[in-house]
Length: 144
Image (cartoon, rainbow, N blue to C red; front, top):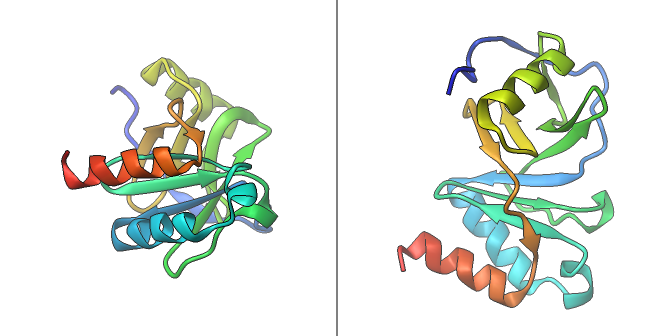
């Protein structure tokens, strides 16, 4: 990757934006996963999820997003459509140019740009939250 996630500093947003995704890491990701399993099917069907070894991201309308201790929130930015950022932090560089650089470096979209841990995660494998998808995430985390 030619764009380092640490090539800039972050500043608190003057006004947090409305969340469009819940993002959780480590134990909080496992708790978020468990919360999704308990969610009514109708509500869960309005959400999309993706995961990697350390993270679970669930996107959808703010009113549908689950809450668990340790979860943080993300939203897209109109200055760089397809770039998801924390709702409380923003990079201290022009977001449109940063988005272009990241999209060029990854050749994938959308992307989650996160502050802590400092990572860029492709989000092009989000799928609807279903019992089957949650089971696949669980199996992936278990190494099966």
